[in-house]
Image (cartoon, rainbow, N blue to C red; front, side):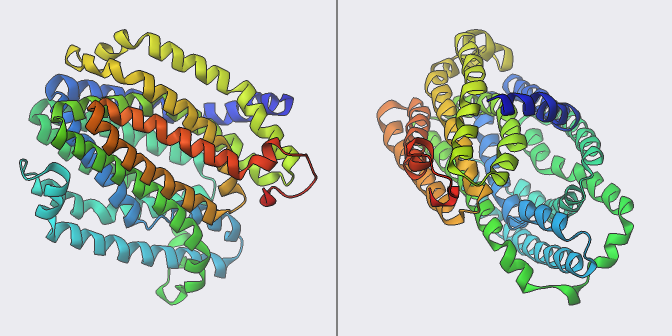
Length: 436
């Protein structure tokens, strides 16, 4: 426990303060302001439609970069001192990302009406939004490619500054468009604001001009793709399945309960995302690097329970404060029209608490490259979330969605404990945590 407290005080909080806190705080403030404008100028129905577009965009953007981002950062960091291997990595990722994003752009553009009906139903015609999305998709892929290069070379300060500038510009554009064009403005803003981060690409290329010469089609290597494939699969499973399942559930609420009720559920999801940002950042900064270093069950158990004893009580108190002040928070974050959201806090908060409990342990899958375990469990979670949501929505209306959220993560946490049962509760032996 002392190690964790010392590390958080001397390393994590310093890094977070310099690199993450400003960015995360800005994301939360930006999200709250945008949510407030949506609530004021559009209302619950707009919140639902915007939520569906955001989920679709999240999935399609992940497909556009083929889930390469995390693996690329790792590989660039490992090969940056080897010119040939670095060239193979950069060339393979660039051309693979380019072709995958262009293919997706064409598919989206020429199937815009079909996609519109999937996202918004045939009652709303926003086909032109899908075509705009298809047009800017390759630029997003280019942004992420350069972003991964800068991250791989640990240029965090530059990325942070550019990210903050991009978020501020995106916020201003979004608020103006919502005020001027209502729902159309909000949808356009969601699609075009990621392209404002083209600044990242421009600055990144200017800052590392010499890297352009490393990108050669002759150095494209399938062995690099083979090495990256586990990271690609893991990223695609988690980054595509969650948005798609969320979109399906919201669409089901729209069809079976009502579009306003779907908007209330989307509002609850937004509140959840706000308070989860900080805890997710802390875990990424400490848990994953620490799990990568440890090799015994004893050390693994110590780190997990230290986190539970030090961080989880604070997080739990925060969630209790949010729950008991929900009657004040809902009209503050949204409007009086969103009062029904108050009934969703209980199950959502409980589910999020269990979700964080499970994520702490699940980071071991990433740290020890337990790819098959990770994928199987993620698929189980998504199937459980979908099935339980449909069943509970039929019985309890839109409240059934947050009940399903809670139930699914309790089941997920239970399976996590079964897999790592010997590491967490068994007889301590000095052997690799891979045997858990």
